[in-house]
Amino acid sequence: MAAFWNSFDSEISGCDCLGDSHLRQAPGDSIASVPYISVTMAAKKENSDDEVDEKVKKYLRGEAANLEGVKDKKLKGQLAVREDLYGKSAKTAAKIEKWLLPSEGGYLEAEGIEKTWRIKQESIAREVDILSSRNQYDIVLPELGPYTLDFTSNGRYMAAAGRKGHLAIVDMKTLNLIKEIQVRETVRDVAYLHNELFFAAAQKKYPYIYNREGTELHCLKEHGPVLRLQFLKNHFLLASINKFGQLRYQDVTMGEMIGNFRTGLGRTDVMQVNPFNGVVALGHSSGTVTMWKPTSSVPLVKMLCHPGPVSSLAFHPNGHLMATSGRENKIKIWDLRKFEVIQTLPCHAKTLNFSQKGLLAAGTGSFIQILADFSGSQNYSSYMTHSMAKGYQVGKVLFRPYEDILGIGHSMGWSSILIPGSGEPNFDSWVANPFETSKQRREKEVHSLLDKLPPETIMLDPTKVGTVRVPQKKEKPTKKDVEAEMEAAIETAKDTEFKKKTKGRNKPSKRAKKRREMIDKAKRPFLEQQTQEHETSRKKQKTNPETEMPKSLQRFVRQKAT
Image 1: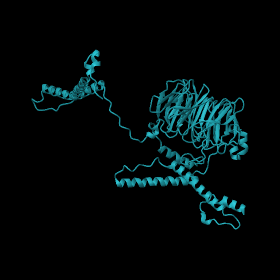
Image 2: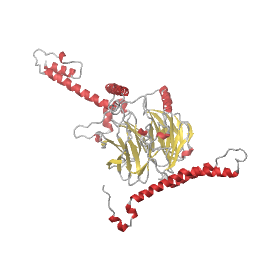
Image 3: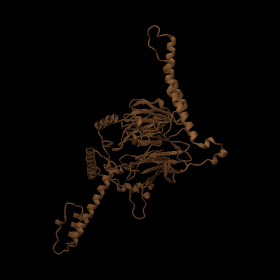
């Protein structure tokens, strides 16, 4: 009977529908097990309530409004009803989260003294399912490398570009090659536009835009010999930096050049977009990182990050963290809310990239290191490592969205490895759907064009959009401004035309006299303001006795009691 009660306890502990009245004592057994079951159920219920409370905080729209100061009873009642509705909707969202977000992200867990960074890709491949193991591969094309990569926002398609002119589009779900072309000139970078139908390639002289079938659609000659490309999907802007240090923004919907700025800090090939606010960051050979927006000819921020050249940088998906690496073999993690270094790691990286869940990949030579922050304290430590075959030189690392996969572009082709816990397990089909059909893609394209943001919304703190600007104190106009205003008023008085009156009242002398009166009338407010300021300054001088007496006698002046 003891075994029966143990099994009954395990079945009933996860069920809240049974109360104490449903429990009956079995014949011949002790009743001591019954309170144990009820205590277990109560503990389970408390834990579930705590979990729900934590999830409710996530869905609440900030703190509740303080209604004590509201005097209008009708308004107070309406606001109270609104706050009650907010609380109910947050509770409902927290309860159904397990149905809306069914998948949970997993990480590598080591047992005992084992370390996760010692686990090899071969060991992971033996434990995962067949579909996941297919994502471990190595494409070797030594004659056309080195390669660079880019994924679509939903992670379904990948564009690979070889330095020797090879462009390829791959369906990552079926691993089928959709199209490949040979442009027969140098290709430095590749970037997808708003969906998989269009991509831009930075070639030897100019960047070109191609469609999915490999047809050349546009040649962007105004950009010049581009080194790096980035696409701002919310603003439909293609940003580029060329050999001469010129940063350009072009609207791909209308073809209009939005911004063309000379950085003045020399040639650079380090460029990244902050996904939080759309600000473009450039890393320079002087060790500085500058942040730009298309409506400003000067950088929004110019910060010295390293004593030597900046080799790469990356932004966290939340937009508050930035990772930079320098030639002095150091990786720095920056808090962009305070522009301070929060961590310095002693390792070099030629390329950096953050995953959707906050893992940081750093690649240099033929070695790749994955750093993770599991504690949430922004303290990154080694999570996984991977060594490529000898002779492979890593050029770019890029996490695939919504998958635990890291794409690697290197000198001999491109590769893919498994990084558990790197991708977001639950996708929002309204934002990015890896399984979208052609009809859904067309609908999404129309909606994204309707929701397109103007370039003026790009700023360091996008939460200020829609807020009311705080009124500032009126600055006192300078002497030059006052003189300019007075001259403008005099000119307008001189240019006034008089009506033609009857004979005798339209003499030139009377006209001149009237014009002089108008000029004096226009001057009068400015002269009165000058005399008033002069009097106030004289009064201030009189009230200060120290200014009237010589320096030798100022120490004998009676001080006023404070």
